[in-house]
Image (cartoon, rainbow, N blue to C red):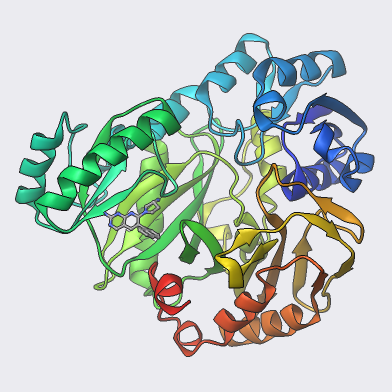
Length: 445
Ligand code: MV4
C-alpha cells in the first residue's frame, strides 16, 4: 500500500478520500484553493497545500500546480475524486511521466471510453446492445438527416467527447434536426474542444441504470450490481437507489454481465461505471462509461459492504481483489438524496453564502457524507453539493421511511436546499411504486 497520497479535489469527496486513507493508514496531502482555505476537512489531512485562487482553471484544474504540489509533498499517488481532472487522460499521462501513480484506470482505457463513438463500437464487439444509431461520427448536417431518416425520429444528437448529458439535443423532425445539429456542434467544440457528433434513436421514458465495476491488474473484473439514477433534473441526479426497482433477476444478471464484458474489452482496471438505458420493455442498451469514482458510489457500498475508495487505493497500489463474484451480494436497499444548496422555487438557482444552521440527521441506517459545518461558507465557484444523505435498510419500503425521517431531521439554513424537494419525491406515489423514468422530475416539478 502507498504510504502517502495526494487528493486533487475538494468538498465532500476530498473528505471521503481522507476517511479511506485514515482507515488504511495512508497519509494524505490535500490541495485547496483560496476559496477553500477555511474548509474543515483540511485539518484532517496530514498536509494541506494552497494551489491558487478560487477559479478552478487556476487551482483544481491546473495540472502544473497539482503536479508541483505532488512533487514537493513527496506522495506516491494522486486520487482525482470526481469532476475536475478525474477523466482527463492527458493528466493521467503526465502522472505516469512524473512517476506518480494515478488512482484510477490507465489513460488508454480512459481515451477509448471517453470517445463515445469508440465505446459504442466496443459494445457491439462485446455483444452488448447499443441504441440504433451511428457507427461513426456524422460528418455534416445532410449525413445526419440521412441517418435520422433511416433510424426514425425522434433522434438524439450527442457529442463524441461528451457525456453526462452535456451537449445533447433531441430532434423530432428533419427541420429541428438541422437546427439542433449546428447548436450541438458549437457547444461540443467549445465545451470539449471536439466538434464530433453522433446520432441515436431517442428512447422515450427510459430509465438510467448503471453498473459499478471493480477490476484488478490480474483481469479479475467484478460487478457490484446496479444503481438506478433515473431521478434527474437537467442531467443533475437528485435521488439514486439500489437495487433498481422493477428489474427482474434475469435482466439484472444480464445487465451486470454485460458491464463486466465491456470492462474486460476495454482492459479496464480500478473502479468504473457502465451506464445503460432501459426502455419500457426492460430491454437495456449501453449508453456510456464513467472512468471515475461517482458521486453516488455510497449506495453501492452500503448494499455490498465493500469500501470502493479503499479498493481504488489498493488496486492502484498493485493489490489484487480477494473477492469473487459470488461473494458480492446485494443486501437490502439503499437510497441517496443529493442535498444541494439550490433554490427549487427559483429554478434551482445555486445559493452561496454562510450556512448558519446545520443540524445533521442520524440514527439506524443513516449515513451523511458532507464536508459542511455550522458557519461554513459556500463558494459560488464550485458545484452546489453540500452533502449526500444515504440510508440502508432491509427493504425498499423501510429505506423510504428511513429517508423521509432523516430528511425531516435535517435542518440547513438560511441557504435554500433540495431537502424539501427530496421529501416530496420520496412521498410521491410514482416513486413509492418504483415507477419513474428520466423525465419524471421535469414532468412533475
Ligand atoms: C439517451 C436518452 C434517450 N435515448 N439516449 C443522458 C445522460 C447520458 N449518459 C445519456 N443520456 C440520455 N441518453 C438515447 N438514445 C436519454 C438520456 C437521458 C436524458 C435525456 C434528455 C433529458 C434528460 C435525460 C435524463 C437522463 C437520461
